[in-house]
Length: 398
Ligand SMILES: Cc1ncc(COP(=O)(O)O)c(C=O)c1O
Image 1: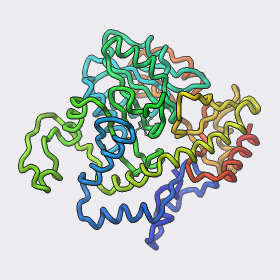
Image 2: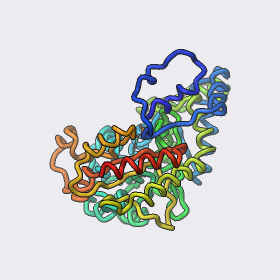
Image 3: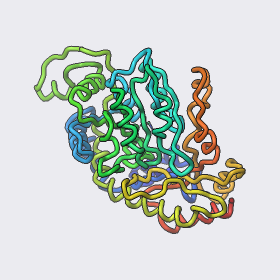
Image 4: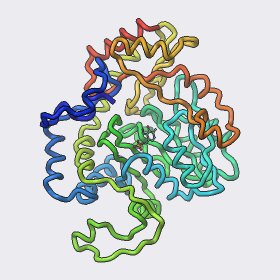
């Protein structure tokens, strides 16, 4: 995240914020536009005096449910909480296995462990498609498998027909880690709304940013009710219900958590949801520019061949370095020109805590491509001029 993504540039306070001491990238990895509409949305809630979960959260839930075409959307504190609730709701617990891609952020694997279940890592499709491999999911299934977590890598939808078929045949659940994919569509359906539960993250660098925040979406009434209870301590009413006089007491029927979202972040979320389609289109234009300039140039590949069946959310702009091109030196050359890069992801099965879990399955595609992946800057306000600076820096560094 860049220093601008803290919103400090647009804030009225004259005080220098510590984040302003961060390196000033010519092209940061991600950035956020802060304007009067956002500021007023937050100020409106601030001045209302009701800051914890209430009517603005409820409005965001209604609007996101409509956007995804699902019956239920429940706002939560972050995407990791969303995954934890989803896995608990579908019944994951001790003795269960959950298949999950290793080429992902660690949140889903950690959430699986927190339910008491064991993550079983699976591979991605190939160098041109970094989404969850249905073939390897199938190979990873066993008698103890309770659920499959798929991840729409970079905002590109997974092959959900095969995944759903595998799950339905065995009566196991599909949880979509849609942290990268708000607004992405697979055969006309919203990512997040295809499996049993979809999980979104509203982290500050995501397509729908609120700082911290997230959402679970589902069509299943029973799963929604379980997640609603677990989100707030297993209590049967909310403070907001009691404040409005809609309830006077509560019972506790689950060992739940405080995974609630607050009104201030929900106000940002409503503004960002209204901008999501335009923001994703702007991301698509940058992705296309990178693809046209870089794919096939000097051995470089730009994964994800465009397909008429999917509308990606273009969360990440990832390139695959030519075999043998050392990544740290490549990234340092870009940094020297002021271009910030990242790596999505160091595979989870290689982290110490996960190595300690025991023998991992072989993941040949993940192990081959992960050391060659570099993520380039991508955000809606990235201009053609700046994107061209990134392209120049990449070509010079190859
Ligand atoms: C693929 C993926 N899953 C889950 C998460 C967790 O979301 P959060 O940071 O909101 O907890 C993230 C966020 O970085 C992510 O990228």
